[in-house]
Length: 91
Image (cartoon, rainbow, N blue to C red; front, side):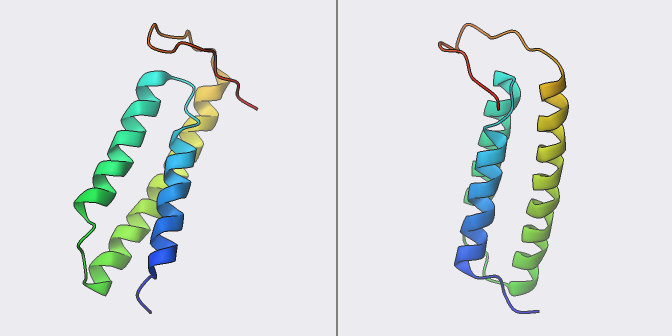
């Protein structure tokens, strides 16, 4: 299998950030965003195509998990925390 291109990696990164930003609960949202950024930052210098492919497969699996958890989180009403100044709309 060919090594993933830079655009594929950036696209996956953006999808993870976008999906993580949909968490209705502030704590889950900030945690997910921080973990995505940290993971990509930590592995930014990986050159080995096999390792890169494994990391991308893991990221795709995590994207699916985040999507499921966002749906579950939207099923239950959350109370806004003090640090959230304006209400978020979820549609």
